[in-house]
Image 1 (cartoon, rainbow, N blue to C red):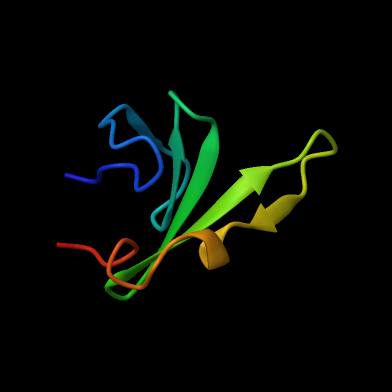
Image 2: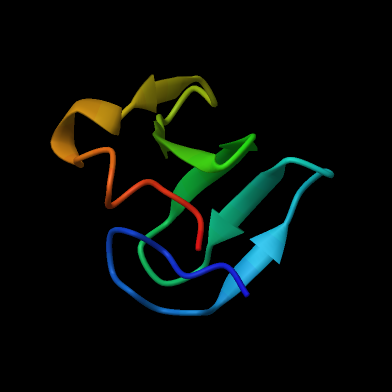
Length: 62
């Protein structure tokens, strides 16, 4: 089960086979191999990367 690396909650919705959305903190997660990429959804619908705020260990899938 996927856990949000930002808020540590499990309330994750699936957008596509590799994209997920955290309903608690409103960020989008994209899975690539064994790594999660974290994005903030902007007001215009674009995504801004938040990967630099998390270590590789925090973004690794278990």
